Image (cartoon, rainbow, N blue to C red; front, side, top):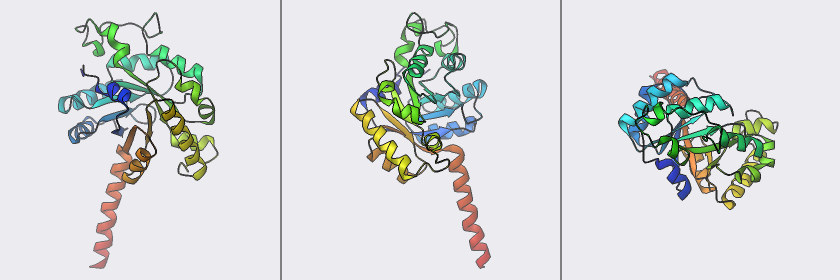
Length: 260
């Protein structure tokens, strides 16, 4: 396991980091990402095919190549059982989607925290505790796991300040696609009205001294987000990146072969 917990330290230091959004559930691909040396990788259990078994395979693949990279998981919902299972597997950070207000944020923190402060079910023998060999895990867990929440709708924007102020939240991640949909701009996350709301949101997050994250699907997009003040940016989505690059490669050769 990664005892250094570099990612949470980076969040507190406001260090800008780049990561990859991983949806394909492929350990070999996770290994490649780790070899390249990104700061973090997020395994998506909301819109990807990731689940408990292939998560373990991917985590092992990553840490076998690069023990410095932080492994994050986005769960499918703000659900106490799903969150518990992911945390028991052993991750550096967890992202909870569709947080719309203080009550959602407080619930997320409680689900990630052992009693008496929280509601997380206790198992001293799990992968996160090195199957019981890390006796201090139950005491240290809350200080090791980054809790990130996603703002993805108009209610989340309206209640952003109270979400930021919720004790135990380590970072705020803006979800452009769902945010656009909630604004009547389905499939148009780059629309100016959506972008204006994102800019206002990141300014508030910065003012409140909380790390801000977002996904960008291109080099230019990532640079733009960092210039706006975002601290941690997913600069590529595995399936999107592979699909785009393969399509570009095929198109180049198709055009060439038509000319000879």
